[in-house]
Image 1 (cartoon, rainbow, N blue to C red):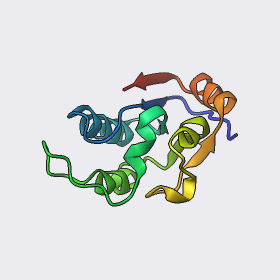
Image 2 (image 1 turned 30 degrees about the horizontal axis):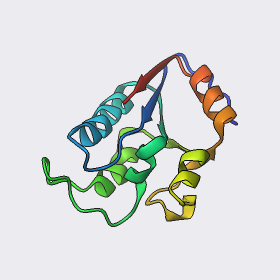
Image 3 (image 1 turned 180 degrees about the vertical axis):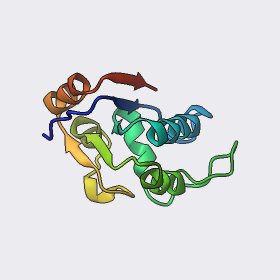
Length: 124
């Protein structure tokens, strides 16, 4: 696991499935806004949040925006560190190859270290 030694770092934990409510798109928007201003912004998709990373999803009914397009825009906002909880992938019968973007697969211990290594955590 790569150690983070930046003055400011933020971990955004995304747990909600796509299409449940506006929280999914708003949480990705929040992550992008933070990524534009916080040098190290890392995303951790876990629980039903891993489903946000599946390719070919219909656009959000509220915003008309495809979650997949939003996920691909993360790099433009400086977000290059994305992790996915391995237990959550297993729960939904997924592998990292099923996801629409590259993510580092992290087990429970690695997720705990991610949380420890960041200055602030936002859980959505």
